[in-house]
Length: 211
Image (cartoon, rainbow, N blue to C red):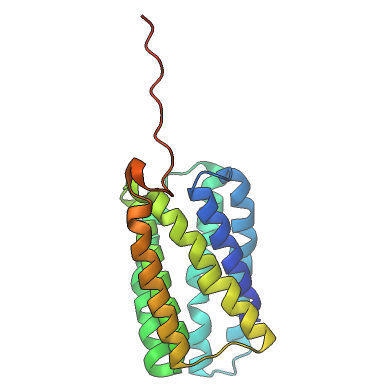
């Protein structure tokens, strides 16, 4: 059941990344955020209630709430036209907790690939804090690309492989994810910076001044 939720986390991250790139109307993206947010609250609740009190199962499920509340917060905020600082500062909380969940996956759960994936999420939610909480708008394009890529790399692809029985939960996978993340996210910096970045939005033209 957790893998099904992860699949739709990938979908909503991809959608939100495209939204940050200015390709989707925010209000239309809000509806899907509400769908996935509700799913990501119901899923861990079910997993915890059926865990039989197993602390490792509870630990693994509890982190899902961080995403569920984020997507509900984003969806409601977009529909209501709320200021983004609230969800931005909540994203800082999520980023810090994601580091803790990464350590827990490495040290307690023994899940090395998801230890790395939690670091991906810590980085992404910290970017949300910078863009939405501190209003550093020049990072919006970069954050949009990181969000869309993480939708596939940390959500859709792992979820599909888990459900189909082909997910290699090994240290080799963890190293592969770590190297991929560093290379891609560093390479995106010059590609999204200013008017010379090939993935940066075109510069806005100033309206003609009447003579």
